[in-house]
Length: 375
Image 1 (spheres, rainbow, N blue to C red):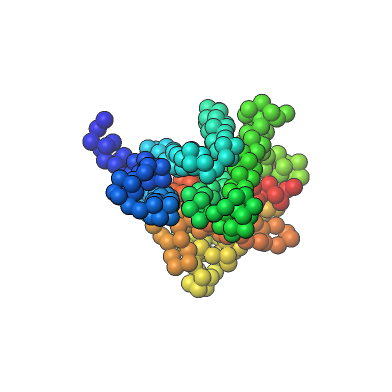
Image 2: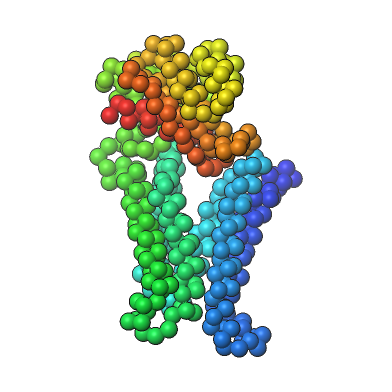
């Protein structure tokens, strides 16, 4: 391995990711090992504070997940190694915590089996999709699932140190009831996110009636095919005005054979001067609200539709990063507008990930918006 390769791997964000993995045994030891006895502490401390300290360590480890992602994006140091290790670190932490809770008798085995089975199934689906050159986008269900799992694990780590009595008395314990409430939501979201992945990949794994290219939301190529087919069937033409994506939306559409029947053209208005001079965005708009705004996106969409004479136009303007954030406009902020004869409507998005993630998510959103107007 060359020195430059080593340097690219050992970024601050990757070091934090590795540290997160190395801290997992510390959490497990804090939760399971009889360390209070080793230090001669009394039983009261052992029962009440041992779980709380373990929960605090778990929260600390979990928070580093946000930190390494922030550092990677802000320093423009996103690496393939980091993309591989970051989700792996999360899975190791969650799996270790769940197994430890089963060992303590705090959590029934069926909960752990559901959560771990979901991870195996989704990982398998992703590998099959990747082998076919398809990227299955993560949904908000998966993000909420992770949040609720983390909260539930913290609650289950501390709840038994506060519960006294039998199962009847347990239901009078607010913490015990709330812990199970959050855990059941986490389990439900776990199942829902797994079903979401299976539905998106139904053609890849042989459960659908079509080909991989026909699968809904199997990535940009499939979305672009559907957009072109829908526009062709409705005899409508398309135009694009792109800032942060630099022509990627138009490129994805024109990758589809026969797209010339529906795609009239686009403007890559990366600079403010092009937005004003070619698309007709008012200088007052840029001066008052900036280029990353609802007003600018609307004027861009209306400008390109008027310029090329299309039936429908989509525009995008935003901050892909790693720098460029503004007050109230962090990296990942994207305004998109869709303009037709019926009017123009703009939507704001807040995408996560590195520069490539934000740009690709923007392309996906633009294609989905076009498809929605054809439906």
